[in-house]
Image 1 (tube, rainbow, N blue to C red):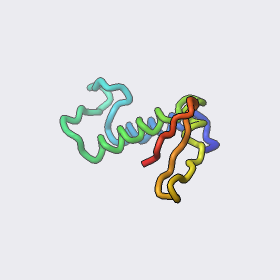
Image 2: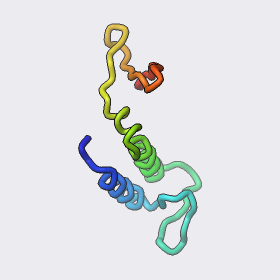
Image 3: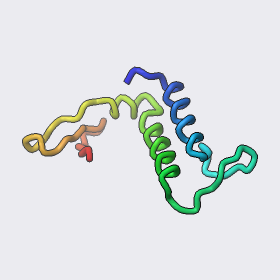
Length: 91
């Protein structure tokens, strides 16, 4: 929770590139990465790392993501309230 945005980006970049993928959606031949025609474990982990980074890349979304969820309905659901007061259920 106390990592800087640059630290998170560098880690995400390392995870994505170690799986043989680019950060951009376009493939480049010169750096040895390849385009995956179907989902496999490498592409799944790389896209999961990109999605997780995009959840916390700016201060507003990071503040909301780091906020603990509140148990509802006797603890069977966990939810957070967004800035407009809407309840968002965590899955």
